[in-house]
Image (tube, rainbow, N blue to C red; front, side):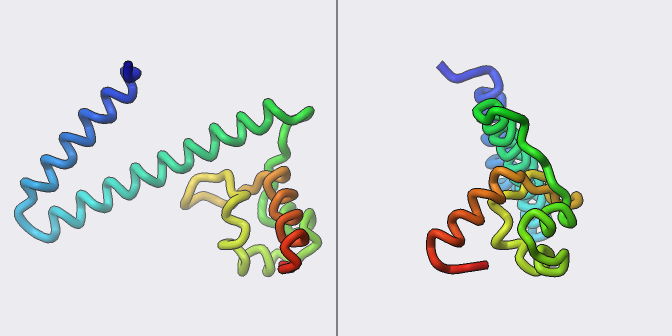
Length: 122
């Protein structure tokens, strides 16, 4: 049986679908699409938060959350390098979109291992 939260989400999605079908012009459809994208971003942020908490529970100690400058030091790179390689670092990102980037140290470690294991380098 679906949880109350899941049922509520399904009802909201059905309402949203109905609103899209009833939209009378491009502006309305675009506004609805922007709203759903915002919710999608918030859901992805929440998913990442849950993943970090789950990862912390499996580690012996809490995972360190690093800002861009700390991530640069951890990776042995410059702050400029971190800014220019945001896309490569995205799997380690744990902050909400639109806020200052924060990275999971343990996920940065995994990325480093992947980079060296694939022979790709950074």
